[in-house]
Image (cartoon, rainbow, N blue to C red):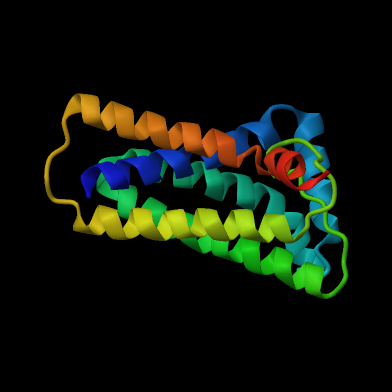
Length: 173
């Protein structure tokens, strides 16, 4: 269980780290990200102003929580809650026929669609698995196993951040 926990933590930490880096890499990137949240009509206007900094800070906090062993379960729970909220929010917007764009990883990849809901649901499942395995993991991990599990998870996280590109390559013909 300990290596599954580490792999899930590596996956989630990579996804959220790349998300924070993409949004906060420059003032222009952050401003564009913040503007993209204006399309979330289900979010009250007063909260839309607070959402960009709150989201970036929350994602950064999740990365730190995931990487510190004593707070890994809290980081996994936070990731699960945030990813579930993303999936539900995108799904809600799509159901209402709204076109939503999100610069999730710092670049505009076009309007979000059902595959974005699937990506966030899959990542939420990874967070749930990470939370469960973290709570059940009692055996110590070797240094090599830890490095391998975290690196493998991080590699999967990097792939997950390219979900839109993979979806296009696999399903657009």
